[in-house]
Every structure is written in structure tokens, then in C-alpha cells.
Length: 87
Image (cartoon, rainbow, N blue to C red; front, side, top):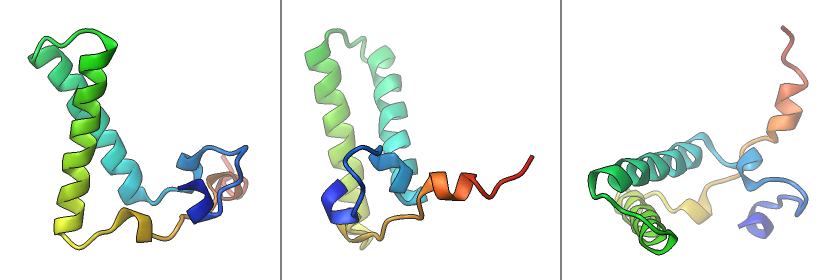
């Protein structure tokens, strides 16, 4: 994904993800957190499987709505944007 978006290997992918992709990843993580408690999941294996399944379901929903994550353009570098913010 980094190569596809032109993200330097030394930088986090999240610094270049669109807001939509950040929100979908956050949603998958929150859903996993909820299900860990709700389904009483424990251990790396079961929690990882839950997280992967949540990501796949969200990805399928995006694709059904015509959004192909790989085809979304990268966002502008957040470090570049943060330099212009003055407090």
C-alpha cells in the first residue's frame, strides 16, 4: 500500500491515508474492541481473527458502495499540513 501511494518506507501509512480510510480503520478497531468484550474473546488468535474479519466486512461494504480502497488517492502529508497550523 505504501508503494502504491508513494509513501516513504520510513513514514507511517496513516500519515497519507484519506479521512475515509482512517475512519474505516478506526471503525474496525472499535468494532473489534466491542466484540472482544461482548463475545468474551481472549488470546491473540481469536482477537486477531475478529479484527481481520471486521476489516474484511468493512472492505466488502465499501466495495459494494463503489469505493475501492486501493484506488483512493493519498491525502496530503499530515506533517506538511501540521507545519502550517499556528496556535
